[in-house]
Image (cartoon, rainbow, N blue to C red; front, top):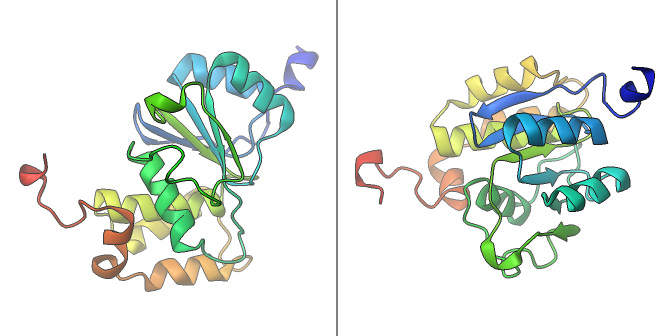
Length: 195
């Protein structure tokens, strides 16, 4: 039992964002990855730390789980290019290698010709700040959630606005009708008319 604990995070901060499609967490360990793949069918990890932990990366390759590493800072909101890539991945619309250019710091795809399939697991160190911000933007731009509701979800996953006020304030000031079309080309199109 003790050895097994060495391969799991006691502070996973795990959550289901979109059932069967998007999940969130803190930094995972090898035991976490095995369990998440088995239980939720995770097929792609998006690591917001730039590069995945080396042991997790090795296991992901063995399990045929895609890995994309994009380095974000918790001190400031991501650049539009970084955000757009993450949103394309989460919506299943990212093309490799065209969309990745210099934005992704680490990419391993089990089959680059098939695209990057979900379910997706997105994580950073604690799963609270960078991950919280990305999930908040996803909620606003893809699900039509208010910025206030998205910010409250960040708090539920341990985001501390006093520690990283730039993320908190940026989200407060997002004007969805101006910002979201850059993240989601279908933003604002009524669901009945989407093809």
